[in-house]
Image (cartoon, rainbow, N blue to C red):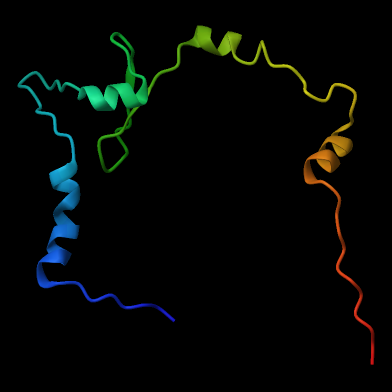
Amino acid sequence: MQAVIALPAGAACLLTFAPYFCSVKATLTSKGQITIPQPIRQRLGLKSGQVLEFDETAPYLKATRVIEPGAWKSFGKKAVNPWPKLSGGEIIEKMRGPVALPARRQRR
């Protein structure tokens, strides 16, 4: 069963347009450049000089940060195995914890 909520006449319009009022905007220059607003740069950890890659197949503007090849070489180098003496099965058992089977039902 779904609940039906009655909204005042102007509320539905406000909910529809709220993202446009609360969004951060940027203007495209004649050179095709935009400035990514500071709140977005801070939230995504973007720094000056970083390279972004654009997805031309996306139906919207989609840019992702390019990870430098050198960063991949050092990735995971400092990782430490928290269970060096356990087998894979023992690790899974330890993570899952004890298994409690349901009580058997008696036949009538």
